[in-house]
Each structure stands twice: as structure tokens, then as C-alpha cells.
Image (tube, rainbow, N blue to C red; front, side):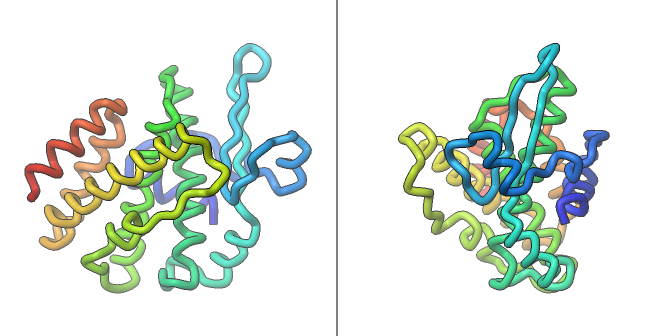
Length: 215
């Protein structure tokens, strides 16, 4: 499932990490052995190793992956597997983005990482639903409208997740109005590929401009 999502995301954005996410997966025991404090259901661990090389490890809840094997999103995406699908997309999105930025010698902030992952959730869900059935007109609201944050997040983390969620919500609604309702998915893909390559400030500016223009 992780490798399938990696191929899908990289194909959508026309990027190539040239590394396999499966080679960086941590199980619960391996993550615990690292002495990680917070242990959410999805987590990308990043460290600088010898010669300042980037070391990565991706944890995704094994129960989420098992559920996606039982209820394959490629067949049907609904209440049985949507949450686990989004969780897994987020982890793979983080992995791809960090690898690409590292290869380009570009720093990436936590907010930039979260914002792109939220947009990736919408794009991945949209494309999956379009292949297997109808896309609900309220998709953006379903994904971003009623999000509960973990209780153990500090104030800065909560602010970051809120900003990422709110901006992804606005941008997804804009994409839906401009492209999904008019069945111009190819044009949508062209835009999100351009968006993917922008800096954080440029992405936030893009969202503000396109959200206003599409109202």
C-alpha cells in the first residue's frame, strides 16, 4: 500500500525520489527502540547522520495498513477505509516531500510539510473516488471541515495544524469549484503540479489569490 501510494503521488506531481518508501518503514518496536516521545499513528522521523546525511524512518499504524489491505481504496473509498487512507497518504506525502527537498538542498518547514500533505489528501482522495465512483460535491468539507487535534499537541503545533488545515480547505474548495464541477481534471492536475513546486509563502499567496478569484 505504501509503495502504491508513493508511485501514485510521484506520478501526479511528476517527481521521482529514486528511493522506495518501503525501505524506510519502521514498525512499532523499532520506533519505540528509538526512544521517541510522542507516538502518533503516523510519524516521519528525521535525523542527521554521519557526514550530515539525512536519516529517515516512517511509521504508519499497522492496523491502518491492514485495514487498507482488507478494504482496498482502489476498489471503494468510504467510511470503512477513508480515515486510514488519509493517514497513510499523509505519511507517504511527508516522506516524498522531505526526500525531494533534501535532494534539492532546500530546507522545509513543518508548516510547509503539513500544508502539502493536506493538499495531497484532497488530490489523492479526489482521483481515487473519480476512478471508482462519484466525487461528492462536499468533499473538501468532509476532509477538512471537522478536524479534531490530538490533546497532547502544544500551542505552536496546534496553530500549525490549524493553519495547514484551513488553507488546504480553502484551496481544495477552490479546485473543486474551478475544475471538478466542470470535469477539467487534467487542468486541475496541471495547477497542483505547479503549486507543488512553490515555496511556502508562494503557496499561501496562491491560495489567497485563487480562493478570492473563485468566489
